[in-house]
Every structure is written in structure tokens, then in C-alpha cells.
Length: 148
Image (cartoon, rainbow, N blue to C red; front, side):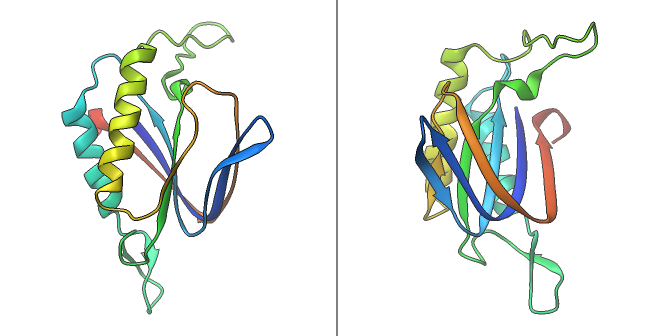
């Protein structure tokens, strides 16, 4: 499982010209699932994501977490995080989890996140989404379950 976490001042997700998810200060997170992922792995990544201290404190040190700043989450499913570009110029996506598993774990991650974060917004699984964001920093962190 992979999370690409971007600290944002605001972010939104639009589907068919309608904004379906929108946040101010917080994290916009792209979520990729592979076939070997499960709820236990999701739990570890959600816990790590929510605990990340990457917001500035009064001394301008990255010392505050999402909870500390009352931040929000915009969670977006993105199977292309498992693109394999080793051969040729057209990526292969065979490493991405099957849609049923990926959707289940995406929904699970949303529900787990809501246990700790008051404002959790989402994209639409499998939809053609347009994501807009203002990356604050820029600050981007990649969490890969294989590295935790």
C-alpha cells in the first residue's frame, strides 16, 4: 500500500463538473493498493499518516500533527501509484490490487481516518476525478507499507 501525502492549504476533488470533496488546511492523500494489502497494513499507514508532525509550530519547526492544527483529509484512490514503467513507454498496472480489494480497503481507510479526524472528504472510487490543490511548502511524504 502506498500513501502520497501532500500538506495543503486547500484541495478539492471534482467529478463531472461537481466538487464532491473539498478541504482547507490538511492533507490531500493519494492511496494505492496492491494485491497483498489488507486491513492490518491499512491500520499501520493510517496511524502513521495521522501522527505525522509536519505542520509548523510557533517556532516555525515542523512539530505539529493533523490533530494539533485541526486539519482535514481529502482521500483519493489512485491505482496508478503501482504503475510499472520498466519495459517500454506504456505503464503496466498489474501490480495494482484488483478493484474489489482496492475499493474495500479505500473505504476501510476512510472509516479508520474518521475515528481520528473530524473532517474527512473523499474522491469517488474509479471515477474520472479532477484534483486541485495548493501544496503548502511544498511538502510531500510517501508512505510505502513495504518500508514501514
